[in-house]
Length: 260
Image (cartoon, rainbow, N blue to C red; front, side, top):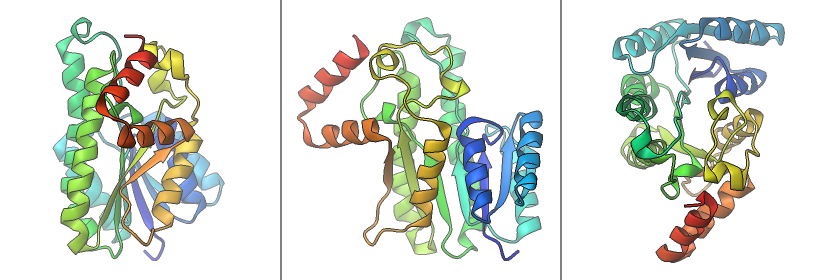
């Protein structure tokens, strides 16, 4: 296949769907994967109606066998893997001790386990595609641990560290690994989420904002290596402040916004 390709998890709705449409609009052959088959069918129809191409498949990112199968099928059709976007994720909010332990474990399994598995099984296809890239969905919630989002923020902090490590390790294979950092995004994932931080900062980003941020990050390679891309003014301000302010000040600001 001469067209560049992108493999997106959690593609049936929200950020994943918006990102698939953006890449398809730029001439990419889209691999869209999710546990929501109906949503995938609608996405594929929309891409085809706009003149793009896509293939879809059911993928539970916590299932290693499905990862192997879906990637092999995609590569078998295309012969390349230009961009892997580890987008699939879940969010559960509430006081740490009030959430069932199964909810904490599911967050870890999907948000970090899924990214590790996807990166692992995609590696040979990325390695064999010149200039391949991996995009991991991080979150501004990982800048400093957020009350009522403790496990979610922890999972995204792990994604941050994994991204940095793989970007260094895989540079010799010409694989670039980056993370995008939105704050709260108006998708189904935040419906019903009511925390101190969502109340004070609001939900100001759309899925399309993040999708265009991902496109910009992957389509323009900076002269100097850049790994982290904050999406939206709030995330940029918070990330900059966390880098330059003393620890006690960062803690105080987060305590204020979270109402703790």
